Length: 556
Image (cartoon, rainbow, N blue to C red; front, side, top):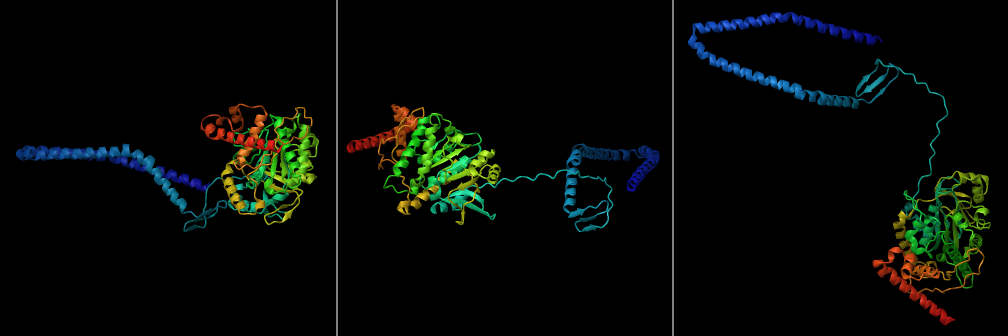
């Protein structure tokens, strides 16, 4: 505080000195005024004498004097006006703009010259450019900050790093897996803690149960697996109670995600509005299992058909078909494994009371347990208490994988234990590169062994568009309506449309435009889409059906 007192004294001295200088100046003011008046008086007297003595010379001299006075007055006025302009016009700009700008520049320059300043109470060593100050007294306020003892801060919980399916495509890992007959499950960690990409041989991947809470990532996982199956030629049957769902955030149903690959459908996707249509598809799968079990059928990976049921619990709640549904699904899951006919069931709850009191769960070859908040439901899928805790702690997009067959890492090493897997991020927005990869796969298959090529020019036969009793009673297995053979004029898309036409006509729809609206879509009932696409395709399909009927009659 002594420094402060000295500063105050200095200020007082300066003020007193200024006051003394002012008083001294005031003493000289009368003297200056008297001297100036006396000089003016002498000038006037001299002019009068000059006029009286030499009048002629005076009159000749005065015009020059007046001219000089006028010139002096002009320049005086100019100087005064310029001074006023500088003071009142440019003065504000200099004071409010240029002066602060210069001050900021000078301050910035001084900051740039500083290297560092280390403070230690009042004494410190300061480094400013090349100038070293070894001692400095700084007057400042000192604050003591006391740390209050409390609980340690909770560390941030980091979620798993987002992995993208596109990266697997761009690095060539996805195509390599397809060529090696492997399905990529996702990213994970080996038992020794090193990162890897988990997969499973396609020949060892059978019926699957994906369980978990809503928004736990089941749909994304199913989409990722189905895309890889479609790439190699698998066909899909989809039952999706939420098939029309789409949120403003971009979330979509599995049906909408698979829309770019709808040519891989055997039947158009359906919801739960028609229980009989659900049973038609399941009976078709069951009957195809029986057909493939007959002598002469050679099981091929390219003949894989996957019946996908999303929101499986909603389908199980249909009382009129619940018992029949559960029995047939259990049969397909148990008997279809060796013949390329598999199930993929996505649901929330998996107790026997939730799924029809049959062994659908226990005969599934693959379990994908996504996040649960119910210990009992988690234990149904993964068993032990330790495994249950793993499921409860999962984040969306990850799941615990268990299979009767070994999964493999990116080096080919096998792993049988329950393993955490993170599904790569993928959606319908990735359709462009998936379709490009599909072309690459088809080109590769065209040059590979004939037995490995997908059968894209024929579909499994035996479709029976039959109405099943609404009371759920067991009816006889459907017989053959048509032996749908490979028709050179019908590509896979037309064959799929033919099945749909047969189904709609079996439901009693006879009007052509109504049929087209149900099979192709309402936009195909008029205009160029009607005349150039739907109507010609319908005529081609009916010719194929007539040909098949003629063959049946001739064989009979």
